Amino acid sequence: MSETAFHPGRLVMVDIQGKRLDAATAAFLRDNRIRAVCLFRKNLGTEAEVRQLTRDLREAMGPDALIGLDQEGGSVVRATFLPQPPSAMALGAAGDEGLAEQVGAAVARGLRGIGINWNFAPVTDINNNPANPVIAERSFGETADTVTRLAGAWMKGSMAAGVACCIKHFPGHGDTHVDSHLDLPTVDKSRAELDALELKPFQALRDLAPSIMTAHIVYPKIDPLYPATLSRTLLGGILRDEYGYDGVVITDALMMKAIAERYGYAKAAVLAINAGAADEVLPLHQIATRLIERLRSTAGMSLNRV
Image (cartoon, rainbow, N blue to C red; front, side, top):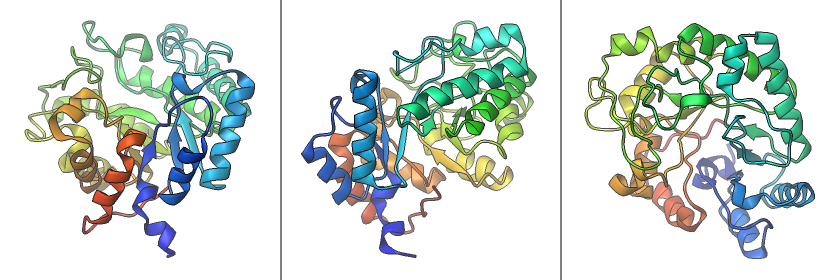
């Protein structure tokens, strides 16, 4: 393999500042061989500005550039100038796989038109806790069958229209009462309980999903030491070894308080890669250089699969 294939910058997806790609950031992306950027609402101006930004990002990162964002529908949309997709809960109420597939395709056409090729959707968490502060309408339903059918259809539509998907948040964020953006949730379920519900959509859709995003949640009966994002038991053991998943595993954002305040970005990234999220870790642009140096010095690093 070439040196580029081994470069730790290829394991990092960063965020950037502003609605335009300035010269310093472009040089940062090129110098560190980064080829993946996550856009947030702060980066999205007018439709024309976003098209220019994604063109500039591709020029800096090359033809294999991955440009992603969260365009789930409902309350979680980044590109607000595109037609507003219905939430997963609304599609769950309709219960129509054909409609879900059409919506996934429509979302993808809009994103592809502005230069986005990776959407961190659909959510495959099951809405089985009414006190959950962060999933709610983002879920297709309260049963594994509903979530699997409709998320799978939505994903097929998106991928047919040319935008990669990412099911999330493995192994399930539906039964929490804490938002992992703010603190570290705990789900005190056994492996048998997870197998019976939360894990079912991930297992069923693993051959269709090009990528899976991890959850910043501790499952003490599975791994009492680490949240799923950093857990070799959950990522390497269940997802990689048992399920045989060989697609892309990406962490949820490492700047979220559930991770950042307990482990720090660099340590969390190394733990995540060693656990099985060997494809993409998502830090802030400002700390990515230090993170890349830490990854460069880490022995036994897994190779990027993207």
